[in-house]
Image (cartoon, rainbow, N blue to C red; front, side, top):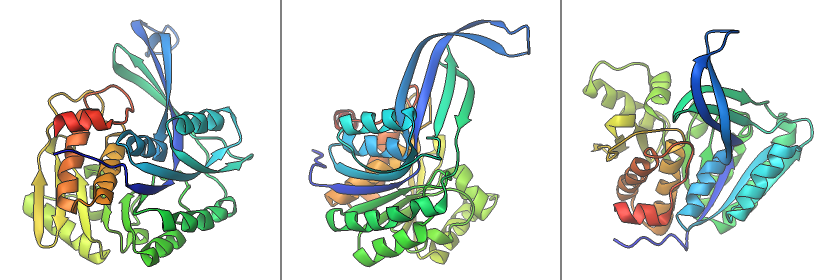
Length: 308
């Protein structure tokens, strides 16, 4: 199957961040505290959160507009510059009172030693212009992605959802938190196993898992529900069917960013004309590629094509 996403346009709204990596070696324990001392010998910075979703979309050859808010700081400039060079159309609000979200990961010999988060929630009034900016993008896209990382960038999501539903576009959501009422009417939401359990509770067996999934889907009037289950693959709840999609990953080095790849591939495939079931199988293949890499790393069309 030859993949071509070049005619697909996707609008993405959500929380952007800068993923910063420090790599080094660790051979001793600190005399100050029982922690490893890492001698850093290289650093790396990549777009994260909703920005990583956008990087995955353009990596597949589709076009995208990313709507979000960043601080008026160095990290915000680095983030926008990286995205623009990668052909992401950035529609950013700049807030002088806000610090751009940064996730710093320290790794020694390919193992993550620690992570430090620098973040701050934006003021809801600052975000209001994003709603109008989002509505303007709906005339030019086939699919919308809401990438919710719980950082406050989707404060006005209910208004944005209303616009997207009225526009008749496909709406895909990577959810966060325990209040999924905001996602009512979406084409598909893609919680991971832990996020799903936070909303529906623990299950005792597969039948119980299915029952809770169908109940959530029906309660929210979703077109479908896709639960990513780590090494167990995915579960797609569509119509009256529970479609099990088993993981293809041979080696798993790092799952960070895998959910971004899943929803980006799902959206690109739907925008290309695939049905949701075929799109989910393709997204599972894409996820199996990126978990074999270290750090947040988007997939490319060439990589995906090689594994189809």
